[in-house]
Image (cartoon, rainbow, N blue to C red; front, side):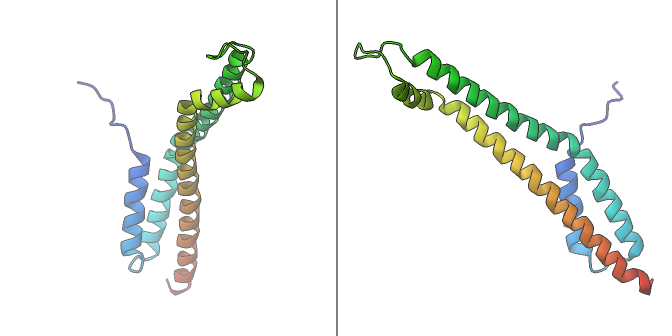
Length: 142
């Protein structure tokens, strides 16, 4: 029997924590707020790898799209088209755009994932700041 821990889904964990905070935030005392802030911060730490992977995958997809496009243009320029004439740079660019469509789709999807990761990161930081502010307001009465 393996002692492997199940793979953690930090995005799901963060979503659950934020939902719990949203529902209970008005009733949390200072200790519960501290605990919630620590849990959210720790989960955000676990998100660092998937977030950095999303950024890297976008950079790789962008590079691959550009490299493939350049290669297509280079291969097509000067080659003979269906009409028996040499293909010029302008036509080679147009044909390369059409042939490069799959790489563009991959880049667009990776950009969507990267942007979602960035938004989650920024929103979570704002929520952590809001929790800290709420704690500051409670402390004098604690």
